[in-house]
Image (cartoon, rainbow, N blue to C red; front, side, top):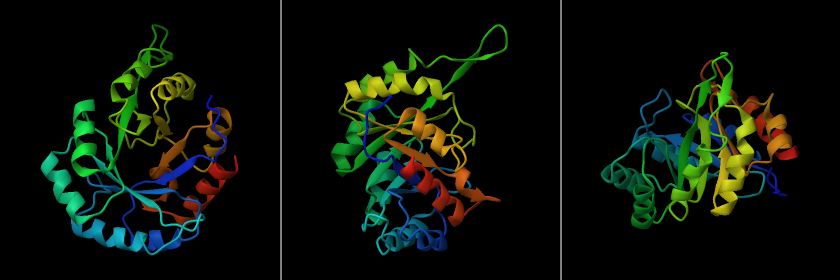
Length: 234
């Protein structure tokens, strides 16, 4: 468990509508995510540019605009260059098979903060029960990203599934992240209903949510508010 005293950071990912951003004004949200990978939440550069401009006009609970995160899956350097020229992102989140070397090159070339999303996988035991295989072997992956990224984001394998991985693997990842100076975000299957349990039990540096604050596939500002408030007060 982390000894973090500050409230966990909140990232709302998959923003697509200006109304969603306007409705978040004054909320305790630290990061907003724009998806550039193939997804039902994917944005064009034009759409992302407009939303980024709106994000500079609003103020979160702390009095500053939210930081913007671009989500990519196995991008080329050319795609990143084109995107960052059009949209002045604060963070590039890499969600594919990007190597530590690639991550470091992105940081050095574009002078942007880089996050690396890693899947947490589970195997089935002979009795059919799920067994968390990442509790020991998985966290060892983090060492290679020391100095290449600022943050590791743990997500359910497959990403965007709306299903949580087994949280009992989190402490092993937290210990490894601390050893290498990495921040740790948790994603996958989060909602306003389970946010308090996660924060109280594990105190992650930050949490990342998308489908858990949607209603019928559309971002719901009431759910965003409920999620952010429960994270910050837990």
